[in-house]
Image 1 (cartoon, rainbow, N blue to C red):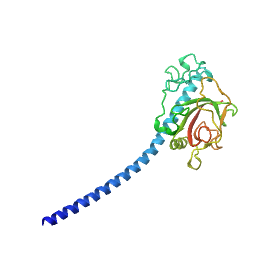
Image 2: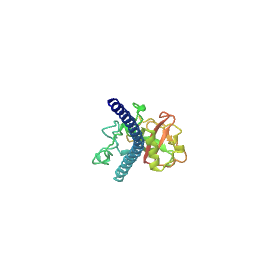
Image 3: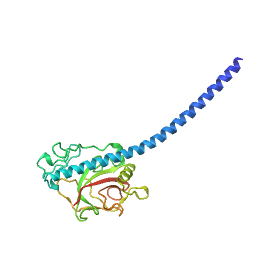
Image 4: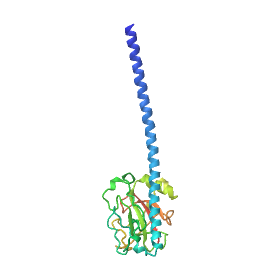
Length: 235
């Protein structure tokens, strides 16, 4: 009798172990699916935040110009990315990131937005304002525009940005920039095309004319890296 009871107990234990293993597998698969969905939702959220910040900077730039300041006097000086002091701006009222100016709160790009293999490259981890590139079919193609960049974003966020903006991702991938863009080390401090030459954002025809989009760099910056741009002032 005792032997029979012992055998039954062992069977129950084995059944319990099997059920527990099956339950653990089901939970792990469920969590895996949730993580994939969360990654997609985080990409969409990041895209929305990136676009919102750029729109805010763009609106503040327009506001400062409406106060009578020339575009060359708009200052992007901030406490997070150095080198933006603009000698043409002699009052806080023409500073984008000052409470008396554009009153924009600088948003440091979170690490999860970025391609961490590019750490250390110029422009990594900060917003870049450049007067050394021309966005095609926006203003005069021979004249550099004032452009806000977020370099080295993750590919999935890049695609989500374009989806949000209604920009085509050819074959499901961000459009390729076929030329080179000016180094992100060349930032705007009141002068355009300094140093020269000015480079063109050579994007596919379907993207030309867009004031904002995300693209893949194919030469400089490095190939297989992704970059968001927003034209602040078309010239």
